[in-house]
Length: 294
Length: 220
Ligand SMILES: Nc1ncnc2c1ncn2[C@@H]1O[C@H](COP(=O)(O)OP(=O)(O)OP(=O)(O)O)[C@@H](O)[C@H]1O
Ligand SMILES: [Mg+2]
Image (tube, chains in turn purple, green):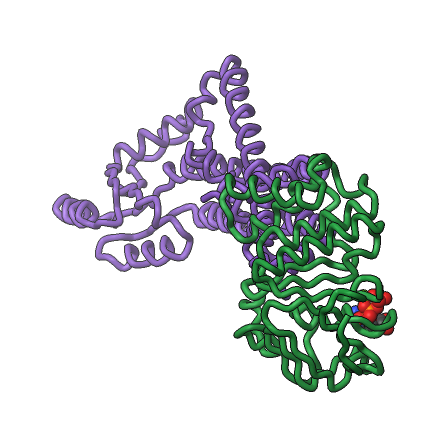
C-alpha cells in the first residue's frame, strides 16, 4: 500500500516534469478517441435512419384472380401464424382500385372506360426487422410464391440490398477505424513512454543496481501511461458531452423535431471512453518499458 | 563470505581477469588494489552480478552468483551496499531522496526511512545539504552521499570502489572510520583502491591484482 503511494508520487512528479510532452500526448489521444466517438455517433444516427426506413419495408403478395373468400382467409391465417411476419394488411380488389384512383387524382378518368376491375386483391406483409437482409427476404418471397393461389410476390429488392450494403459497409468501417484508433493510441503512448524510459535510462540502471524489482522499475512508467490514457479519455468524453449538450440546446431551438430523432451515445460511453484510453495506453507503455534484464 | 574460483572475465574476447581465485571472510575489511585498468571495478561488478564471469565460480554467502537467475538478482543485491566509482546519483532527486531510495527499494516504512536517512546523512556530515541536488554538490560531497546510500540499508556486504577518490585527508579519515564502524557491526567490507595511503598501516588484508589475477596478498 505504502509502496503504491510512492509509485504514484514519483510518477506524478515525472508527469509534471514532462508536462508539455504529456499534454501533447493527452491531446493526441483525445483526438484519436474523439474520431472514434464521432464515427460511433455517425453510425448510431445512420443506424436509426436505416431502422426508420426499414419500418416502411413490406412484401406485397398478389392473389390469384379466381381466389375464393375462404382461401383468402386461410392465407391470412397462415401469415398471422408465421413468427417471421409481424404485420399483415389485406387489400381487396375494391380497395386497390380506390388506391389507384387516389394516386392518379384527376387523371383517374382513364379508369372510367374500364368495365371490370383488373386489379387483384393482395396482402401487404411486414417481416421482423432483424430479418431484413437481402438473401433472407429473397428466400422468403420465393417460398411465398410457391404457395397455392398466390400469383405474384413483389418487394424492393434493389432498395433492400443497397440498405444492407450501407449497414455492412458501416460495420466494416467501424471495425477498421476502431482497430486503427486502437493501434494509434497504443502507439502514441508507446512512443511517449519510450522517450521517458530513454531519458531515465541511467535512473533505471541505478535502480537495478540498488536491488529494485522489475515491478518497482516498471510500475511508475505504467502509472504515467495510464494517466495519459485516462486523461485523454476524459478530455474526449468532456468534449463529446459538451458538444452533445450544445447540439441539443441550440439545434433543438430551431428544429425541435431533431431532439427525438438524434441518436446519442449512451451514458455508459462516457465511462467507456476513458477506460478504453486507459487500456490502450497501458498496453502501449507496457510494450515501451519492455523486458527488464539485470 | 565471498569466494572466486578460477574466474575468467573478458570484454570483447580480451580477458581482463584470468583464472582469478580469492576469498574474503565474513567480518573482514579487505582491500583490492592494482594499477588503473587492472580490473578492480570489474572484480566488484562480478560480485554484485552486474557482470557475469565467462568461466569459473563465484559465491557470496549462500548465493551461487555465477548461476544466479534474473529474478533472484534484485533480492541478492539487497544484501550488498555499493559505493560506485562513478557515484550513480540521480540528478533530479535531492540528497535525501537519493539516500532514501535505497530504503524504499527495501520497502522500509516512511517513519523508519526518514529517521535512518537523516542519521546516515549526519554520519557522513551531509545533513545540511539534504535538500540539495547532486549536480550542485562538490565531488567530495557527492562521494559522501554515495557512501551514505550504500550504508543506510545496513548491508551484509559493503563494496566500495575508490570511495575516497575525491576526498581530502580529513574526509578520507571520516569515511574510513565509518567503514570500520559498519564493519564492527558485522558488515563485510571490500574496498577497491589504488591509493596506497588507504591501506598502509591499516593492518588489513590487501589483495593485489596484477597480470589479470590476484598476484599476491599482503598486510596493510
Ligand atoms: N563494459 C566494458 N566493455 C569493455 N571494456 C571494459 C568494460 N569495462 C571495463 N573495461 C576494460 O576493462 C579493463 C579493466 O577495467 P576496470 O574498470 O575494472 O579497471 P579498474 O582497475 O577499476 O581501473 P581504475 O583504477 O581506473 O578504476 C579496462 O581496460 C577497461 O577498459
Ligand atoms: Mg575502477
